[in-house]
Amino acid sequence: MNQDASTVDVDVHQDTCQSFENLNLCIKQFVKSICDKHGSCRKLSASFPKYYKKNAEIVQVVSDQLWEMFETKQLLSINQWIEEGNLQLLLCKLNKAKVDEDFDWKPTGVPDKDIEAHIANATQHELAKLTELYLKEKSEAIKLNAEIKEKETKVQKLLLAVTARQKEFEKVVDSCIGEKQNLSNAEATVMTWDQN
Image (cartoon, rainbow, N blue to C red):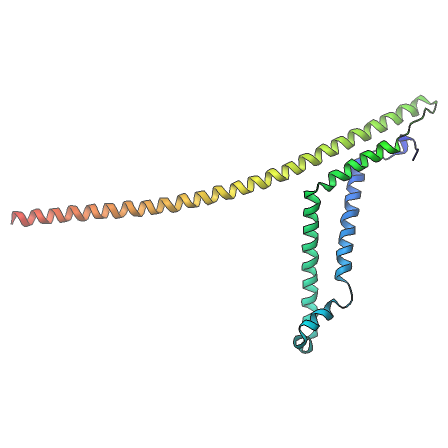
């Protein structure tokens, strides 16, 4: 597709975000279309005919809640898949490739337009590179945060274990001190008997 670079949209990050939002919207509509299929409540009522005959409204509410839970679970798992697959980063690379494909510069004879076209293309490349770097840093930061939380949990468990052992040690020390006092008292009693 031949077109002047000055007419190409400069903000690659915006294109990436738009593609990503379109994907999310498509996923939500797909999951919703599954939930909105006719007879979803009928299937539940067929499984529990006694309850449906007694109170159809409750079965409908339960069916709706089950489908909402299904939708939430599916969206969460799909978003996790998107994060694990670095899909946003791949969309960024795709937009960068599109910029290269769209830019087919030919001299116009007007120096200002030619310079503008080259500057626009260079800007698009820089934005694409910066977006790619940003997304890499963001995914690394998410991984580091997960590792930090995991290590914090381990440290808290260790602190609890140390506190529990310290309490046990204090009990042992207290019992030893008590026994020592009992021995001292016993020795004193024996000495008084010997004197008598």
